Length: 220
Image (cartoon, rainbow, N blue to C red):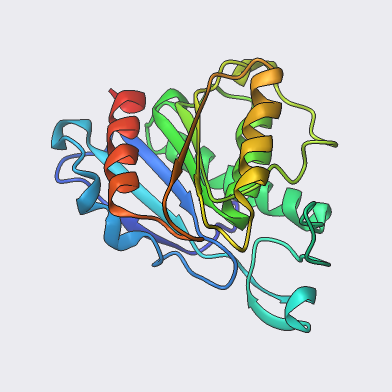
């Protein structure tokens, strides 16, 4: 029996037939994106369960080794955002168990969207592109493709719809890094929608509305 990551879960008003698994960023928690669910304005008929996992508490090198919620360690701050790829892949596998749990609950993998912000988005890239069952889509927010040089994508998700969003004034993960991630995915043949917003390392109301529209299209 897998030992699942602890999660915040929001159930639809009727039995769930779709799911969104949404990963938070460094130092946050599964509660981080919980408040925006009503603002997505998804049709009730879609019956979407939202799953917001909590990352484990680990020492983070760039924060002087302080223990905090993190999907993986980051060794240094630079344009490459050098991560601990071993931990990143381990986190991707742990989140993969949550996808498997949704499937065991009766939800088709093709009705499951993976979303991630910042560190969570880096884990999302790794997991979604390597997952051995077809997914509904990947939402990558203010993030970067940390494992692009080592990843071995699974062909079943070769046409996975991907939305990459970034803040134009992001000082944590520069907008050009998000754009480069989208360009790499385009070169690899993935259908990528890239959007920027006048914000820093965060989300904003127009973006949340766009996310709702995108999720509804993926899960209809």
